[in-house]
Image 1: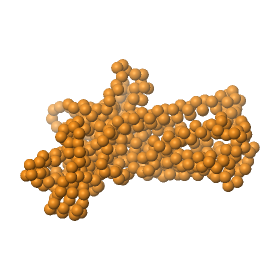
Image 2: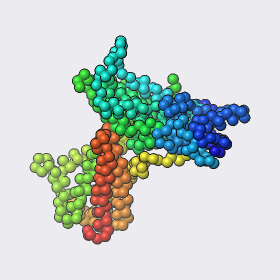
Image 3: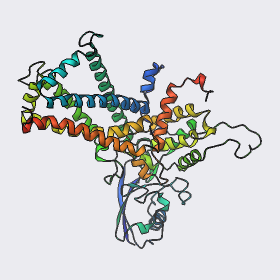
Image 4: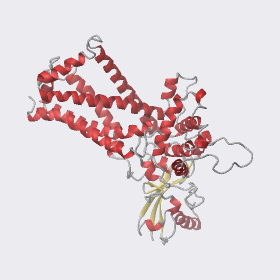
Length: 253
Length: 242
């Protein structure tokens, strides 16, 4: 396949950037999107130019490191797929592909297609943990968890933290990410002791960086793990309850 | 660690009273928008229903206007309950608008100046959800005109206080005014179409049992309100009411 790429190039954080066009000739339709970029970069290096920088790690859709805006769609227009799992057969010969970094004030561009996603780490640090006793491993199934609750928690835990939700949101809101991380723990018995403290801490940390939700639902469409906006409703409810909760009575169930 | 992307930190130096502390959060603002939205929706429904009396003749609707002032009967001094409702309604409007304004500013800031090069192809966001800010502005401008037209009478040369039926006919007989009412109610329809659905998410009312009914409710409620409200100017224009 012969393609034309229009790629955002930027030397460093805060530096001015611009789009540059590159020819990508003879690309195999079986290669992944990142492999296509690898080929383009090899040619750039051979030609003595600076290669296009992009984030990537596992390349099997589970780490959340990769992720770029492809023709206006986060991770490309294939639903439930991360950039690394997007294959070039999704495109046609002669296509022009516009590749942009995620855009949000909270995630400034570091270089080319790489953005600073560390605010997501700050959000998780704020409350994405549970307290457990040290010592020997507890018996399995010691704490009964209703099956549907375990499933919902697991669905939320599928979040790989790629930030496509924030990139897709017209408000650059971090709600889908934060709510997935909250639902993951808040839905389980093990997450109950810190439930309300966690919700307030993570929501307020999120609000330091990102916008607010207007219930468009674009995030769910963009999510490579198809995480549901049901989690956002859960987060909203838990936040409001947490704000009015009398902590002295938190031991009561 | 880098803090370059941090939204402007506006944390006050000292702790605010709990209600203001609560209102500082975006999630809380959305909750307040939902609650004030419910109040406004309830008002819209009652307003539309009450105005239906216009189809039953001048006595019915004039009596309706009069009984609003007599609300509470012998238990409350005349017009006091009406004024309490008016103050509550104004407060709901004020807080709804302030939260919308504040969140819009936050969101524009969070989004930043550099936009995507490729125009967005929206997959889930619909026309109603993307135009909330515009339809909201249209609705508030219309409300001000509507008050000037049929409450204060400043925008209606033939206005006579207490003559609800005649005032309505005198106002809607003017074609431009009828068009303004129709256009504004369509904007209101768009606003509440997204609002009714969205408020369930904002307060966290999410349950597999009724999730899809939230959309049905939004469509149903919007249809009833818009058709009801449109019937008044149209009825006057085609001469059913005169």
